[in-house]
Length: 327
Image (tube, rainbow, N blue to C red):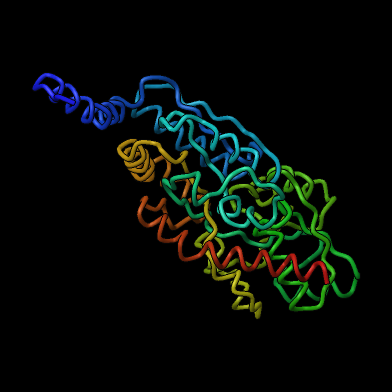
């Protein structure tokens, strides 16, 4: 086949057109409303973070940023919806670290694979998931929890889903201390803490942000925190300091921002940059200080390194929990 100069130039132009178009799309993003899909109920920290960062992204880009809550199945309904979205930067996922890791063990026929279907944008540390007990019980530390659970024979603690970090916390305590604490599962931490206010559960494991109605009303007390002490409750010792020995209590829990695989790298990088910049604003810094969150959002690279390092540990702990429940 004879190749003319004109046909060669036309073919060459077509080969460079695709990356050129991709760069152009990234440079002009966004030009229409952005949708953030949240895996948990309004009022919890995942939702609070999503709305906080949505406000900043909207102010910096000049387009509306709409937050939608798609609750259920430990955040997997939201994850599946975002996976199916066009990878163009206009559909963003805000979910928990558990939804991005242990769901592959806990949710039957999970409709997404974090490793294949998402690009991680930023991990936003939660400030830990403390154990909070109803004030009326008079429990002030982990020893008090153990004593009360043994004396009554029944204690109920709220979680935001089967296999979630709060649920794994309860299972770890049951296993180490020979307890029979009953986990009560919710679609998010907001309804969990509402039930604590109504005194229908003895306590719960969740974020300081989500627990504000309980803490501000004086209805709940923080009795143990994971990983490290909180600046807002410096006197409250960690689970490990109080004798709990599960590796669970040394892991980082976080809210996770992700986009579908195939989203142009330039858009992912810009979104990551917007989240990092938002954390430097007075409004966000004040929120962090109010709730004792002393770790801001992580860069895209740091997020992916964290995920590679800790996701296998989360998954193995979830597998062990399932095995223990079956025996």
